[in-house]
Length: 304
Image (cartoon, rainbow, N blue to C red; front, side, top):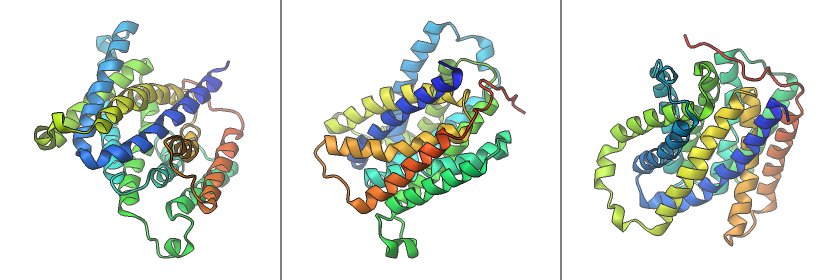
């Protein structure tokens, strides 16, 4: 298996794990402050990744040189997760996952600005298809809502977080100096936890942790292990082997995974009008994954 193929496999697993956080997060969001939820998420996930990084022997002093790099990355993901849980208070899981699929088109732009990664005509077509499909789901197949730009508050908040997530992908490649993915992830998580704790300290103190319903704890464990520790490592592994736009292309699978998660918990399948938008995002994924040769794997960019 080539390095590029390993990167694709990592992102396939990534997309399935991320989808679960939408279904669970929508059920937990009303019961806990988004900042407090995200801080605990980073703490739990950081402990897991930190243990793995220590066991790997990569926890050297040089790995944490220029710690500002981890602050930048941790800050971007902190913004993303707070916006996600705030948005899920009002945005349905499938609609929120459609917002997530707008990330590739933003990531492609950031990929050019940060790394000068080019975008071909085929990629432009794929990203446009994916954006149209995502917007169709966000507006729930309602042309009147689309014409008036009637975007829900939750979707709008979450989109702001997705912009931060899109910038995160090329910044990882720009700021990584050869550190193993698990060690680099740990540094980012520590920085993110510190920033979130500072931001959400009043909410952390005010939360009655013993009185939280079980769904909050189930969600915390899932997002810490499956949708944080595992996905952060998978994503950074893939970023070092694939162009930013292709890495983020796997977000196009998220609505499909979320629909399956929702059906599995007993919800009805979405109407055909929404499924048409999901089909467009699937077409975008196919176009991006058949774009041609990958960029050179494991390319390094020194931080400036």
